[in-house]
Amino acid sequence: MDLRIQNKNALVCGSTQGIGKASAIALAEEGVSVTLVARNEEKLKAVLKEINEKCQFERSREHNYIVADFSNPQELKEKIEASSLNFHILINNTGGPAGGPVFNAQIDEFERAFTMHLKCNHVLVQALVPFMKEEGYGRVINVISTSVKQPLDGLGVSNTIRGAVANWSKTMANELGQFGITVNNVLPGATATERLNEIINNKAKKTGTSVDKVIETMKNAAPAKRFAQPEEVANAIVFLASDRASYINGINVPVDGGRTKSL
Image (cartoon, rainbow, N blue to C red; front, side):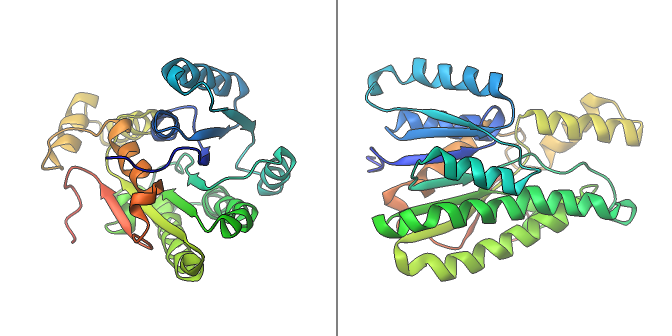
């Protein structure tokens, strides 16, 4: 299927590893000019080199990166504005908060997560939407979690903030749909990333269970009986970013192998 996405520009956050990196590569392979965003410049350069090597047939596409820390929304805003780049596609994606019971969470844990996941999303949307309106084409895809449908044990702060982002996203979809801009959420299940390794190791440590046992239990929670690969989540993201998804707006798409029990 031709996704009719060539010659579009995409800003991909958290793109030095995992789902963000896989999404950036997949978009570039479809002919999209990609700008990576993360805080580690050396990792950004490495991913940029990988994209250029994998997408040699798309030499006419120029890819870039922006170094920014999502703990500082004002700095993020200034760096995006200073880049003077315009984008048709925004992939909001950043690492999740530390795990633990919600009762034990400190107030500053909520504040940090709210800043990184909601404030920064909002800053980026406000910066990018004016151009999207001019073009009559915009795609905002937020990488969240299946916890917005079914809260996950031991991820209290994440469950709370992810739910806020999902509601922000739905509201934004209602407001921007008239301009040819869609806003959707992709909800990854257990995906083979560094973030998942952290969750597995924390669970093993807190429960006194072996890492192998935790992995087995987590895999068995999904009918697919395995973890997703980042590329599988990226495939859903790229489709939602495409012209083919023009009438899909304001939804949550689980990519979890069937783990989520709700419809």
